[in-house]
Amino acid sequence: MDLTSPNGQRALLWIRTIAAWLVALLIFFPILFMLLTSFKTELQAIAVPSVWIFTPTLDNFTHVQERSDYLLYAKNSLITSVVSTVVGLVIAAPAAYSMAFFPSRRTKDILMWMLSTKMMPAVGALVPVYVMAQTSHLLDTTFALIVVFMLSNLPLMVWMLYSHFKEIPPEILEAARMDGASIWGEFWNVIRPLALGTLASTGLLCLVLSWNEAFWSLNISAARAGTLATLIASYSSPEGLFWSKLSAASVLAIAPIVVFGWFSQKQLVQGLTFGAVK
Amino acid sequence: MRSLARLLLAPAVGSLFLWMIVPLAMTLYFSVIRYNLMEPGEHAFGLENFRFFVTDPSFGTAILNTLLLLGSVIVITVVLGVLIALLVNEPFPGQGIVRVLLISPFFVMPTVNALLWKHMMMNPIYGVLAQVWRAVGLTPVDWLSDWPLLSVIIMVAWQWLPFAVLIFITSLQGMNREQLEAARMDGATWLQQFRFLVLPHLARSIAVVVMIEMIFLLSVFAEISTTTGGGPGDASTNIAYLIFKQALLGFDVGVASAGALFAVVLANIAAAFLIRLVGKNMDR
Image 1 (tube, each protein chain N blue to C red):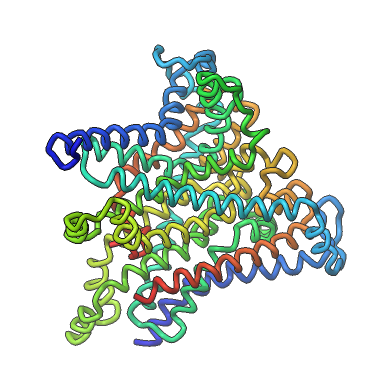
Image 2 (image 1 turned 90 degrees about the vertical axis):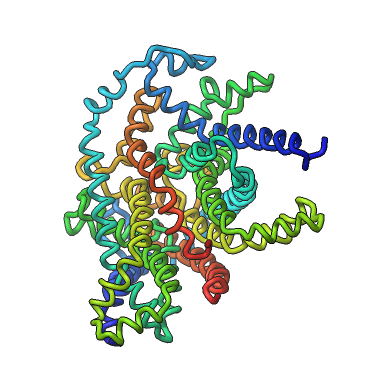
């Protein structure tokens, strides 16, 4: 068949469409399966072969709330991720601004050093942070989680903001400076409108990262300050055997952030590309 | 102006410096004392902890596993990511929905990812994979016991593939269409277009994907701790999990701290490699 003819083109489009849908469904399948399982009874959940048509039940979801107070964990997740992101932006934005527009000889070294702190595996700091949190009675508090989340996202935030700020032409700033704008006026009136998108995408990414953060939440929080990641881990045994309850808890834990991610994917990817993709 | 600029930098630099130096100093201190949470008191211990950690047979396995995990996930996500991005780049019916489906796993938290795969996908009796295996006439695999490291690699790759796809899609959209058109006119084959136009265009975003994944994958933890627990034996223990085992399961802070210093050294080797990679990208 001639692939350049209109018929060939149409055939190609069909092949591409089917292949793309197959790949997408294959990758999405585990999530779909979990979503379905959360509406099954426990017996239906482990049926072999898997049940695809059944009367959905909401029992699992009520069970999750009753057994482990889902709303408390959701509240902790929300507070820790939002506060750590906002505080992080407040600290990172001025730093990125300063490095992008007033570079010094050491700017590059500072940036590299910041990135290298992110490379240090969290586990390297686990014992000291655990001991510090314990001696200051901050173990299992949202405060400790916020500080740790903020610090571990800070290098990425500075980097993302910096790489986007650098794309703002310095001439704009010079013009503002000629007009006698103060450094604050410059930041607020010139940079902020230009950088709002960048701030949003950086914030979004950090929100997702903090919401899904598992290492610190598993190790320095528990029943009081625990996030949804902690709640799910508590289902690993022995309730892990109860698939539909595990699924219901999981769906509740990921639904907010997955839906959030769907709506903000364009913004997110802009932050993630470090200005390398245009 | 200068000093004000420096003042703006201070909070970020200061807090990161503390975040780095305080744990590091404490780790250094712990690593040379005998500090076991089960035995009260701290004694000077010299370099015994290091000897203990390094001669621990788990150490070599853990380093190897860390690198295997990192390397295979990066290769899988970059190769498949480029292919999938190319597949969904041109418009087709339902492109928007396909994109949403494709990126979803990136937003699934690691603990959910781990439990979902452990139970519903990889269970040797009820799991979906076991059903597929039986359907094609194979004996179902007990994934977590027989292929523990591979299982963890699959979970982590499933999470990070969407990330790579997302970045590559965005990059492809910025490609110069006229150039591709011209190449096609001149009779360039699909492979030639890919090799000489698409791949060079993607180079920078591939560097970004490798960089971010390295940062996050050196310390994979939740996927291991909620599924295999590092086992069977040390088959799926990486450095991060080994240190965790020493510290919080073995209560031996001294040895764990010595291990943590190794992790820091390993991270710095990786960072040095990365910085050369990224450094090139920064000077545009």
